[in-house]
Image (cartoon, rainbow, N blue to C red; front, side, top):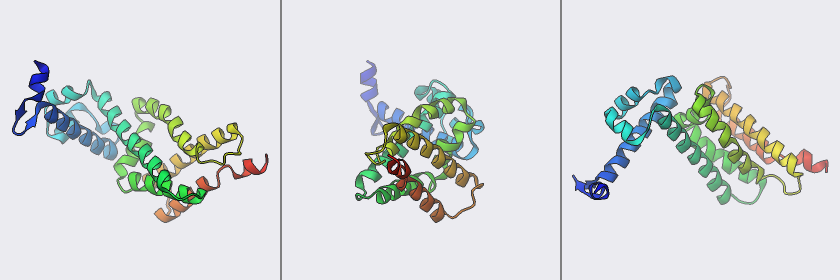
Length: 207
């Protein structure tokens, strides 16, 4: 019976399609609020008002405010991860070219739409739910960096370097987004590329 109702069309769309569209509206509203006003700006009422939907439709897709915030964060995090994977896969062979492709892709996602940068990098600093999830995602981003380090480098050195670079790059981008790091976008990109392309060199030389 439920499946029949979900597949029934009304106004040219099925119930399943309409639910999916409402969920996207709520996620978009959550991105706007979390990415501009931070965690305190996100409440069920505020999201519904922003999405122009009733609370009934909010609870159709999300159990509570925390579930929405987490869904917004995870969507941005997955887009960032995939952008990095795709950029590196399409880049030419040298370490500097791969680093430039990765940094450019991340900058385009995080700085061209600062809401995404604030959701991924700044919101976890004040929201406990996102803080926990952010810690869980760190190994995924560290792994992306570790895979690009010189193969001859000691495995522990590779791990330490990758984790350290995630922390360094995160703080650089937070400073840029918050306005505390007053450099041009080009200078930021160039510095990040040098960090990534030269990572592992000293360890490799000392083996």
